[in-house]
Image (cartoon, rainbow, N blue to C red; front, side):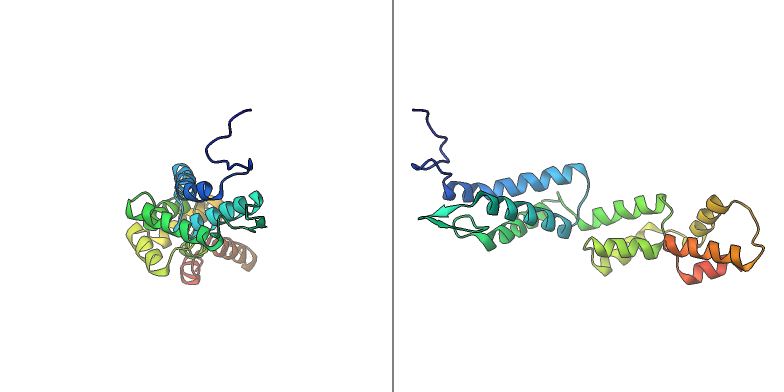
Length: 190
């Protein structure tokens, strides 16, 4: 008779206690795998890992004494979320995850694409970065949004003069879509 791995019980089913004890390590490894590819905010990582591990646990349909535990490892359904939070706090404390580092990288990439401060702010908020950190990051970037808007406008429309309201409106909509403020747009198109 072939021997079962140590994580299997006498019934041939996975041993829930062993799997539950391996959950923290699996969560940490998954988080580090994600962070190896690019920076993530705590919120993004939490969402991804919670979705992944809650679904994994639910798909395995663990049982204890014949009762199916839906989305639960040995009574730890809510503990998946708690364990994800704990592991992410540890990664942050160790400096392996940083919302400020992610925000700096995001701002740098967005500026290189010609995005303005409003679009950058909106995207960072969607990723779970708090407003104070967004303000600090945008200030630290020390970008002259007026010059950047002029550069983006010139790249898109060249040195073609504004001849009528239609061309002025087209330029204004372009800059607005890129995330520049009305004040910057208005001062450029005067």
